[in-house]
Image (tube, rainbow, N blue to C red; front, top):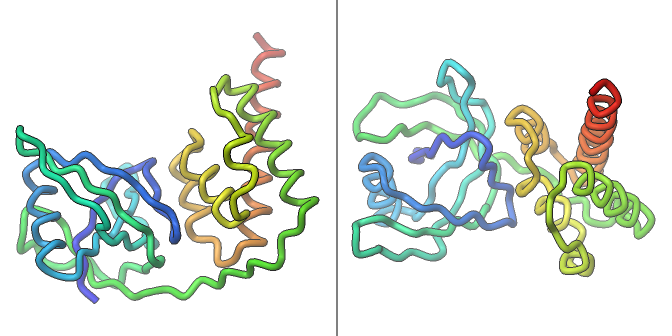
Length: 197
């Protein structure tokens, strides 16, 4: 499958989540035009410091689109599935595009129990407190756990590498463990830096 890609570090899309984007660069306006005239799919992916693409990204399907008076595109992508880059294709457009292979990551929804859900939310409360993030967790408490952990992964100021690790996780139980571990480490590091200062 050939797909246009949008390399954007820090803005990781996960299957089953939405990502709003403000498109203004000419090459990415061309990318959206291409996607709209084909399957409406764009591959969201991160790259390293040498601009080399990571192996795994997420396909986003354009599910809302509008154009502003100054020529920008406001789009929203719905994450459908993860993909692996088989190869980057020869430049034919202003944007980059790749040959991609779809990945079938299993959604083991029954693995997570109420205790684990509460543990994660408690840990996240500590995290947003030490990071001074203003967020009302009551609003997300009642949504599906699968959505909660992806929401936390998307909106939290984790490093690009940490977000990539979560994106490449193949099932929900591993995602939970890795996310919990990242939160724990960030809290410890934050408290240690306060002690040193």
